[in-house]
Image (tube, rainbow, N blue to C red; front, side, top):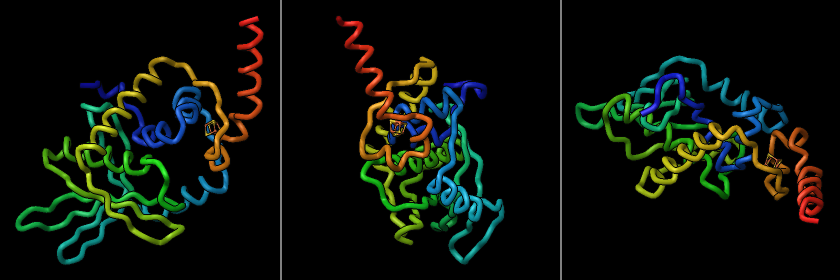
Length: 205
Ligand code: SF4
């Protein structure tokens, strides 16, 4: 169990799955740079995160819901939590809004699953599903919190804590995803990987 003072931002899990260096630059070095993608994403989040409520017959909707897990050491906020009526119970169903389209990796699913784990711990309840809404495709994708995704989420949370505790930012390695990265101009992956290889070679010699 973690103390309240040792909790890390839930979004760090998504950053770590995307790129460990990005996670370290944001959560260790406290660097952030807004680009077109993050600006659009922020505007989209601001629109949903209006801290209000809606309700329909069998669904109640809460926006900007704060949450935490002492077991995983996470704190954050969900864009939307729907509460679906099952008999006498209202079961939480987290929904995360993303500006782009579904990703090749599990970074968004891991972030959503971490939200579910936080809610489960806070409400002492089991949450089986949530959803991701993508602005580019205007589609909502249901996500099942199965054993595999839960293990990946717990493993990612552990790695984020280890990375932040180490205080060491991994070296840059240029890949296709760098073009989508908000920190491209701060990270300078091409120049940095060349410089690291040069220094490693010089030290070997
Ligand atoms: S530019 Fe590439 S290597 Fe650098 S933080 Fe972003 S994704 Fe990672």
